[in-house]
Image (cartoon, rainbow, N blue to C red; front, side):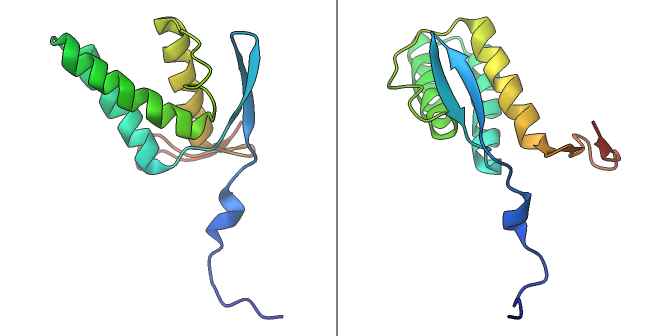
Amino acid sequence: MSKNYDLNLDEIITSSKKLKLGGKTFEVKQPGVQQLVTIFALADKLKNQQEPEESMQAMEVLLDTLDEIVPGLKKSKINMTSEQLMALMSFISDYARTQGNKVVPKVPGESAHIS
């Protein structure tokens, strides 16, 4: 059987990972580019936000986006600390850059390396 493509991007997707929070184990799906951009744009917005109502709206969108990557996280109603939230975002960012043992460069022009 002949393949009718030159690049199979599905091969790049890694299996899911797991995390533990509040005594529960959650699956972590590999995030998409749009999810990453949303998460880090909202985190930056929250860091610089003065208005409580806008902060709450941004946090709601952030939690919805995190729930797409970590299904059930929002529904579990576990109240994360800011340290846990930052660790989760760092974990997701690292996971997005990792494919098996390969690390995708953070900066254009930076060479990829095997970890």
